[in-house]
Image 1 (cartoon, rainbow, N blue to C red):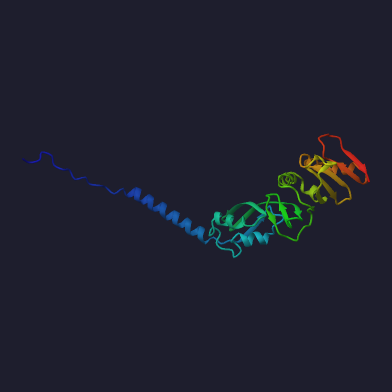
Image 2 (image 1 turned 90 degrees about the horizontal axis):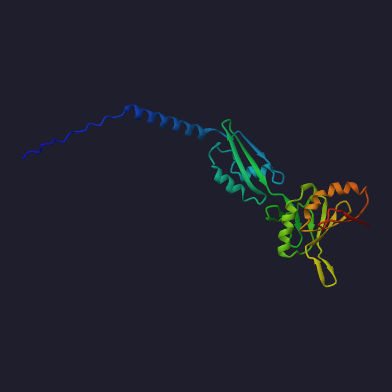
Length: 236
């Protein structure tokens, strides 16, 4: 018995318009890719850096030999730059005029730890360096828990205030064998004054410049280690 139903042959029409559109898109994308690959790097800009030089940033950015503008991807650039202990993060911007900009988020020096012989940064990294200009020196050992609090406290201090401190000495307040304040520190200032503070009230140091102005040139010891708003000062 013959099959009553004959198979119909389906003729597929080539959609030339769609194919043409795809081809155009492909050509445009290819041209864009080729143009991007051949744009030279004409200018490198570094912003936000104070402690790391422009030269250091450029040499670590993989752009020291001025490859084409888009030849190195952002991930590789960041990976290379973040090896520098002073650099917390970096933003990268490019424009079609051949300019690439590195915006650096930098860690700042807090103090030099003489016990460790290292410069302590705000990101808690430790750097071996001989450049101690503008940073105080921690002269003795501090217990680990208090040391962490000391770093956190210095992180909240203005850069200008930190530069006024000459030495940091861990000096717990004791009355005989009784420890009254185990978190106390003695600071020698570059102006000749002394300051007592502790990890709880370390942020009071941000008022030091204003307090100094009220001393009218007198030299002595400031006590900034209490919760009182009253400033206590004793002459030498």
